[in-house]
Amino acid sequence: GAKAFRTASSCYRGASQHLPKQAAKACPHTLALNELQKSTRLHMHSCDSRRCEINACAVPPAEPSDANGERVQGVLLMLAVAILWGTNFPAVKATIESGVPASVAAALRFSIAGIALAPLLGDVRKLPSDLVWGGLECGCWIAFGYIVQALALQDLQAGTVAFMASLQVVFVPCVMTAMGGRFTPRLALAALLCVGGVGILEYPGASPAVGNMDGGSDFMLASLLALLQPVGFGTSYLRIEACMRRHPDCGLQLSSLQLISNAAIALAWCATDLLSPTREFDFTLLQNAPVIAGVLYTGLISTALTVLLQTRALGKLPATDSSVIVATEPLWAAGFACLLLGETLSSSAQLGGFLILLGCLSNTLLPEDLPTRRVGAEPQ
Image (cartoon, rainbow, N blue to C red; front, top):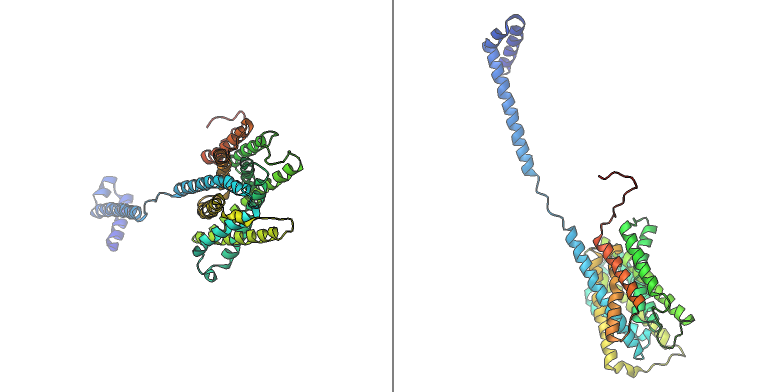
């Protein structure tokens, strides 16, 4: 075939130089060359077609991404956490108003929660050391938030303390921005709305103090303690998210470790408080049915269950988005406080709550990068 191809090519060049065009085409060798070239082109085209078909079949169809489904699950889980935490405020306040010190209520609550989730820990010796220390650290931050919350609830309304806790929506993005993260326009708008809502809530007359407080230095101290909640809870969100990113399959163990350190800190606080010479406590109060119900509910439902749900949600949702969703917590807390404790919200407090809810919805529904347009820019 190669010899015939060379012979035909030589004949074709010679014929094209010395013969007329019609004669060259009539040469048998030239005709053979034309047929060979035509056959070669058809064969190459056929090979290319089959190669394209093979390549097309070799590429698997793109599977639909489940990122949106994961985000929806995370949003629903965090919303459930916010509702259950909303019930926690009136439950803790009712227990404290029954005469039980905040330290005793916290020790009982976290001990019950820690015992409930202890079987999930398994053999701690087989767990990674960074997971163990990370879980204990997260529990310390959560315990700090709950301790200042319990102290503030002694002197402030449950709804007021809950609305102050929502400032974590500002604390978390600010910390992430300081660590090199991206503070998106959507989060900026949500944070602005939530801060405005809390500011209106704290306007004089919007959040009356309880007990024998007259709005003086005691009110300022209680407000300061309530404002420390975002530091504890917000930092715990960031640390839990980091732990879940390194160990995505260890959510149950992480939850149990958090409650172990929670219980240890609460028990230490309780022992220090009860050993104080100025503290007088009647242990028979723990036999009252409302106290027992409040301790069991806060330990098993608003603590143990919410820790499980929160840890699961933070494995699917960024801490910044989680903190904004949890900002709905004070609305639930205010509603349950009205139903269970008879607390009422003024019109300014209702306006503040509406702004906080609007901030949560803006972070969930609006696109991450809000559209911006320069003056005089031509439409796309």
